[in-house]
Image 1: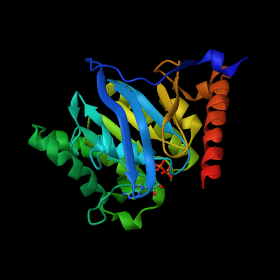
Image 2 (image 1 turned 135 degrees about the vertical axis):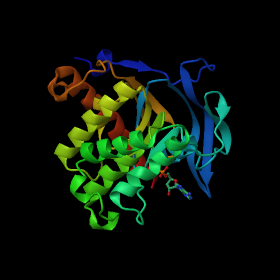
Image 3 (image 1 turned 45 degrees about the horizontal axis):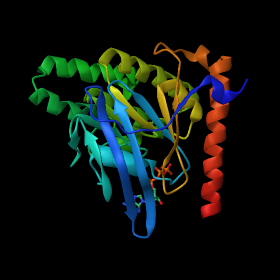
Image 4 (image 1 turned 60 degrees about the horizontal axis):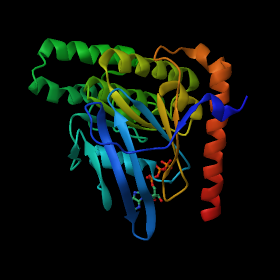
Length: 277
Ligand SMILES: Nc1ncnc2c1ncn2[C@@H]1O[C@H](COP(=O)(O)OP(=O)(O)OP(=O)(O)O)[C@@H](O)[C@H]1O
């Protein structure tokens, strides 16, 4: 079977703002010193999308996510959130970093609680807050460590804590930069299914950076393949599987073909990045 024939490949395109379009990257450029990192990137994120960015290390994926998070701005072009230019971070966007993003001076329980303080101000009762903290401590299997300091946790536990904190704060957008990298295979699978469940039950929109093509396909409805630096969107792949996914999907012919196709695309970009060095 011709791999590309079974997937919907589309030209990445920016469209006018419509109610479903939540985020627009419009012809975005970014240079650090002499290094051009992002070169004319345009794409939209629609309400309810789960979009993954895959591409070579150092190609500019985090830089793009940082623009949507409001941590950095484009040199040219614009990033719009619900039609307005992003000018800084906000509680509507929960960011999960590669390096965990937990506060070392707070215990496990306090870290999860911290993210909820904003919601208490927005009308969450103390009882709801307590229940939410307990829910995420249980979901992330951190019950025996609720009073531990982050420095005394394993890497995988710290990452679970960071996920608990981000999910508990209930932002509309989940912006995740390699959030599962430090987890063992079983925990990573459990976290994938938990995330799919949260996406469905709480109607979120997500942007994920990952080096795992399998993870990208399993979780996403759209995947953007990013080029060697300076980054451009090389190809958009629409993932045709239903929102109800389980691990059996990984063994299907369609999944295996898509994984092969995506891996080839990413490897081409890795090779180009090596040549540019
Ligand atoms: N604040 C900064 N100042 C200077 N250079 C930066 C800054 N942020 C990123 N860069 C450079 O921009 C390039 C792209 O970095 P970025 O972190 O966006 O890539 P990435 O695709 O997310 O990489 P990885 O997959 O390895 O996490 C790198 O060469 C990096 O060194």
